[in-house]
Image (tube, each protein chain N blue to C red):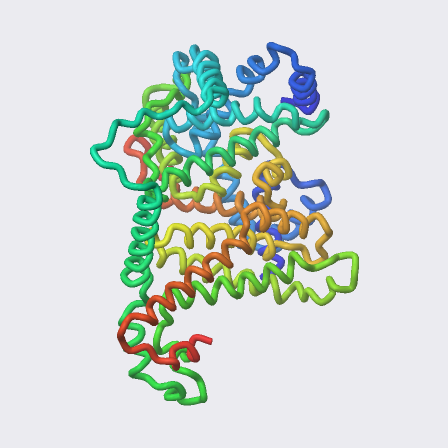
Length: 196
Length: 290
């Protein structure tokens, strides 16, 4: 979403357009859910976090400043809500997040052009990446997810997480190093000769 | 080596195409000279390419069909819950009734008993460390060092945690109270503080591992501190006001200094409670800790 789109959304929300909030939810729900899911690895937690985050957005519409980056603001709300949610779930041991593979989720339709061997290889690599992501801390994971999947600039990520640019860079470096290490240490996929 | 560290942090930014032309050129020049960094760059770039195999997770289509309705229902029920006055709860008729103050007094007594129980049983320092300290008198280690300093006896965890928090507080106060507009900033001695931050971060990892789930509050405080320390360690050698402001905002938003104070208060209560309990408690231990 471009800066102009963001400014347009902000203007509609500030102006009190009755359908603006619903349209906003429809436009951003997948992104919000996506980040919440990556942070918790749990479908119902992700839905709960996304709903709470949107309710916070609704309550804070009055604080939006025209021209301000809406993306950064929204991701800040989602990240903080997810962290609060994880902390409240104190009985849940940290670092023991369930594997993404154990949760039913939608990967999208398989590539029709890929043969069964290629598809199996890709599925295996996806599982390895999921496992590797569970080894990364919450903050590092958030920085990586926002950079890799949500295409946020490091400066925007730093603003969303309330850290300096240097710190955001460090988190991204550390998360990639850990993923790289986990992938190189993981067992080779059965349908694939070399290591993932 | 220091140059490598600076450049390595920029490798992910380069892979994601976020470096400006000038910095990118400098990085490329460094990579051409440094085999280790260029290997790291190649490995990391390959990992990022592999990650493209995994799409961003999404929920099944049927989940999205009713999403807005579920959200709207929840918002309405939240709004109604807040708008309704608190209903008078149903109170069954009691067989006997005591005056209101009696319940209050009973509650206070229970809290007191609970506090004493926690203080005596849960917050008491481990017996073993006291016995060990008695066995080795101060100054017994050659070279004028105390036994604790020499590393022959590991300090108990609460003592190390307390020492760690004290050091962190001093460091944070120095940074957040610095004023870039005045010469006060010159007295900040940034290289020293950055080095101390790095040391404290290493110590934090060890402490967190040892604390585990035994003291979640302390573990969270140390995690919060880690973030602030990382920011201090990452300060540029000539930081501008915004870097210090971000650190300051982080310290305030997480109530770091207040939580450290609170932890100190908890520790001193635990100490005094343990002091009431009969057992060998030598003054030398306190002196040795300091």
